[in-house]
Image 1: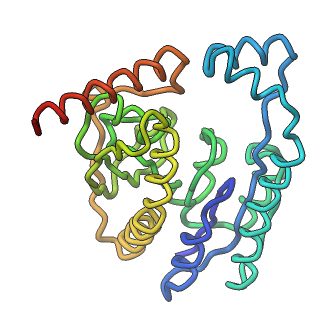
Image 2 (image 1 turned 30 degrees about the vertical axis):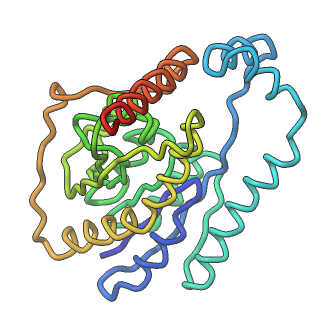
Length: 266
């Protein structure tokens, strides 16, 4: 089966594992850079206060441009290195949806698109491969669609999180499910009140299982043994970035659970 991969970074394990399959040919890896939306200064400040509060915004105003750029460049460099080791052709594009990008994807005549770690992909792109495209979503669809991963499960006091591989559809994370895996979620109170550190560490631990689930899904599609499971999105909701008040509420809930746990031990 002929495959193209679309990513904004972090897909090194996915590429290595897919490239090792005898029944899969990766025709190209399309890498789109992480670009911040163009907004005026006043709009940037308003949005930052909404999501991070006044103190968080003040910290952001300290110049860190060079560090951010070198970090983004490093992500792309690692992807290119892994692709080169596997003998894969890389397409560095400004926008997956540009005419040039779509034309290049169409010329490759792929059977399947594999999407990993991107922004929302429109139908004009995900429908280019003959069988459509699949996506790795770190959430238990249809209950948790959108993101960010782990935050809302932790916010809601869930005891587990899900990883879902699904076909891409016009609505976010709403396409037919191919595979899912559930994993235990238990907050490390040594991180309190810094839940961001815990979430970052937890997400890093999902890389291997996420890559394995994609490989398993691609193998199922290639073999013809796939059973597609339609989603009933009325059972869940699409989550979005938490605002400052929701982040504060997260800390309050974590503190309450921590105190409840201590009282139970006494």
